[in-house]
Length: 199
Image (cartoon, rainbow, N blue to C red):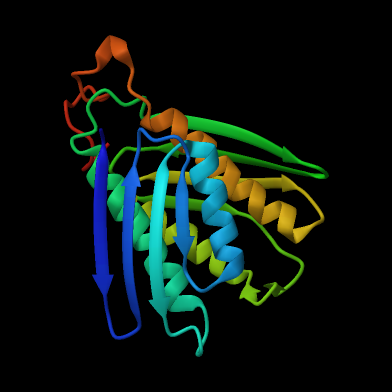
């Protein structure tokens, strides 16, 4: 089983994350930020990755540190669980409709972090959460997981639908990319024989 745990303690946050890439979509998530919990539940459920997140942070100031550090820990745990990344599909693409909204997410578990974020919101907050923090979450996740990640909201009106389709798109794309290809289960999916570094 491809599992990993990561702990992070700073003056701003204390976080423990455990992932099982070959899980069933079971989750136990508590960040202190209700909307973020809801999005991480979607990530787990639709990727079939088991996800445990226990986080406390300085949310009396704002949600920035907790949001970013949770993403770092989840990304690090995913990267750690992937190990040498042998046998993985490597690439994943998902197009997610959610009522009036359509979002496309593409991922390459290349060990070369990069984020392209083509998502705009019409409101500064969803619940108590600043909408600008969603880009920060995806940026931190991509960096820590070693993923090239493209997120493109093609259209939509409801900000909740827009962000939720981004997380569901990541989940479905990640599920494809993490899955083991039984035809090449012992090989890294690269002509270089290793993922990361230069193209």
